[in-house]
Length: 139
Image (cartoon, rainbow, N blue to C red; front, side, top):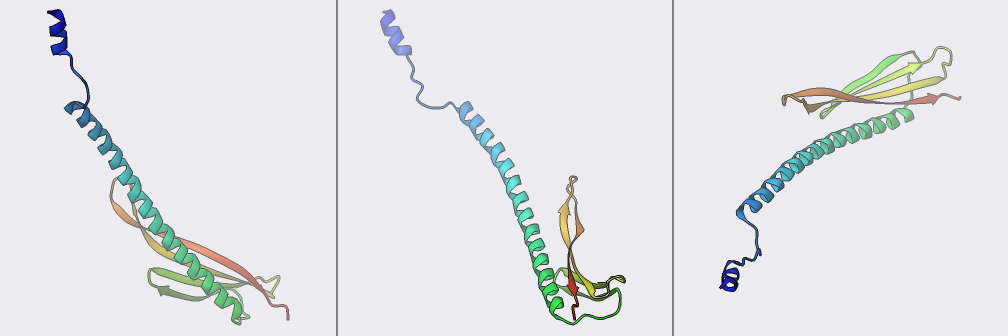
């Protein structure tokens, strides 16, 4: 008779219990929430890098145009300031008094970038890059 009782109470564990499935789902949900935050941070950084690359391209194009143009002979001055889209471009020209044949051209590009602080509020921060070159008049 003990042999019959043992056979009737024998169970096989082929599946998961409801509690195990819920614990697994909760662990996956926590992981996906963390990954979604990482994904949005990556998207924000990608957009910021695109703006910075556009600013560098704009500054280098402007610098190449100015290197081929005749420069003024007078001292330090702001040659031009203009806005293109979200970018503000400022071009300066400096002549060193000790070496008047040496001209330094600087192109500064600035733009505002949205940032989110730790409290969750959004604000705009000014970012900028500067490219400089020295043009020598060897005539």
